Amino acid sequence: MAISVRIMPKGRAPLVVILAYDRLCTFEFGCAFEVFGLSRPEMGPDWYRCLTAAAEPGPIRGAGGLRIEADGGLELLEQADTIVLPGWRGPTAAASEPMLDALRRANANGTRIVSICGGAFVLAQAGLLTGRRATTHWHHLATLAARYPDISIERRALYVDEGDILTSAGSASGLDLCIHIVRKDFGAKAANSVARRLVVAAHRDGGQSQFIERSLPPPSGARLSALLESVEQHLDKRWSVKRMASEARVSVRSLHRQVREATGMPPGEWLQRRRLAYARDMLEETNLSIEDIATRSGFGTATNFRQHFRASVGLSPGTYRVRFRCVGPDALAK
Figure 1 (cartoon, rainbow, N blue to C red):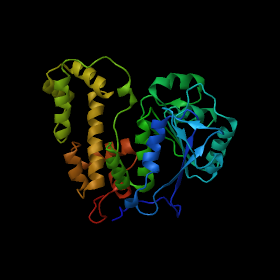
Figure 2 (figure 1 turned 90 degrees about the horizontal axis):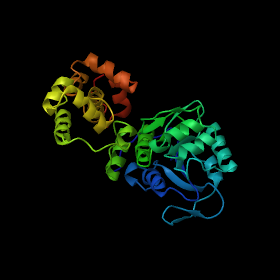
Figure 3 (figure 1 turned 45 degrees about the vertical axis):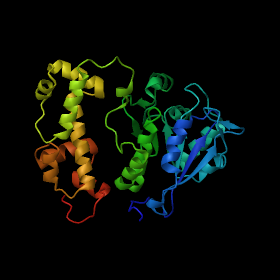
Figure 4 (figure 1 turned 90 degrees about the vertical axis):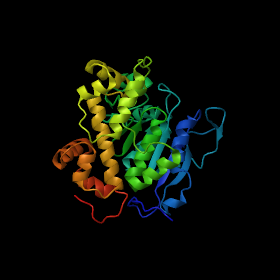
């Protein structure tokens, strides 16, 4: 039985073209192909079509000695609805002028262009990130900022969506971005289904700062893990930072330090994000009223919930539910 999904308004299955280049980053390529290239008959006939385009003439070899046979060359970019650039050879490696011109023309024609990890350096060479927000692998953020000062670097983001240009942080963040694209194109139910097939989260909170090299966690890490798990299981409770510190048997100052080391954010922000994530799940997957969701997620009143949700997501809970719900439209409270 086909999954009911929100289809892109093009009247046909959207075409995703993945660029392949010599010394291809095969993991990043695999991320894009797993999401857009695999056959998914349960999604119906309008699911993505996917082709691979050779970014340059000559043999294309991938990491690990693989050889890639593309479906065509740069002319495929003219047909694409979405172009994916899975990584790049390195931050100082120049892209060919024909490749850069093809990307510029595609962008001018309204094609969505997506980079994973180091692919941002190619988009920067093409001038497509000038005056825009973007990210890349944390190891190369300083290089991107120094070489292209006109780009607004998002240092903590797992991915950045600028509408027609999207960039992701390192490697596995490409999966986060690709699933985000599925969510935009086909809705939450399709994104959740793809994520389950890949055995990954449909949406990860936090940013890439949590993956930057740091010292080993303190000995009290087991207590902190137990605390965070307890908080997530009881988001409806009143969780002040002081109470969380008491539960973990540490000072408030130590709690701030340990939670930031573990999650990349202070405890108050982490708690707010978990509450919002839980609320999003309930809006997408249940018929609970806004008042019930506010109570269960720990926001207390519907008014407080609406204020925080709009500030974070940019939509009211009711509008978000209509756009991304996974349940029937009847009896959905605004």
